Length: 328
Image (tube, rainbow, N blue to C red):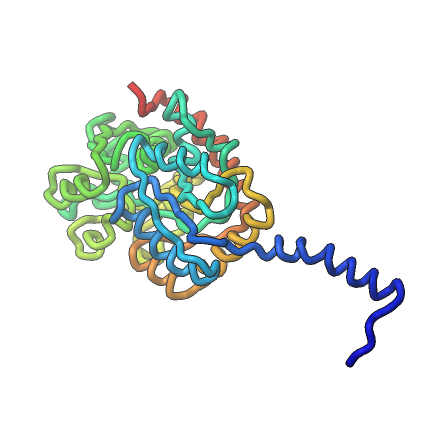
């Protein structure tokens, strides 16, 4: 039998260990029950698909199931509001995209949640590359020709978007502003109807995400004139960017990341951020995202918060200046 510790030093060491134990446990937070991931869009769509893909892998790192809860409607405000009012204990996540976290500030006079005060970032996980697309038989053979035609006949070229206030719509607005052109904007109820009209040749052009139109582009049924990325999209190496077309400062963020209620403790946020970063470093996850036309992203919580703050300084004033609203 080993001797029983005596003296002040062993007791002091034991006391320090006891004090350190709660801090250590807090630093390595683990969820105690299934984690709810709220998606503010319908099941089966791109946002839902990404949440299920990433969530399944995230569950392995967290040691608890990640359950996707779809709460679509009202410009993503229903889902965002539910997430904002959830208990700040790390058991509720939200797919915070550039619409819910940024554009809605200007698109709605009153929001049931505050994108700035009610959330904090966990980490980025995706960017949706957009393209200016035309039917295969279009007269517009290049982005330069498209811009020239738009300048020659303001308002004559129809350009579809998946809806008023969508990130795609915002991308077109910035495109018009920086290229000094005026298009005839046609808002659809989602991307699929617009892509169908492109395929039929009844829509002259559209700002569409590659995830929705990638198959038609690769199949030669739709032509991509330019992407909104800062660099050429890896699966469309022959398609130039709008920056290459002379819009040197052009950027249209369509990012998505995990956010949690603002009062979530720092150790919980850091633990979730580490788990998400591990998922986003997984080759199988990254490759699958690229296959479906989505750029994998990764960031720290602080980097995500900084990106949201920076983008709001440009897009919120622009949307207000243009008078775009989702309210009557």
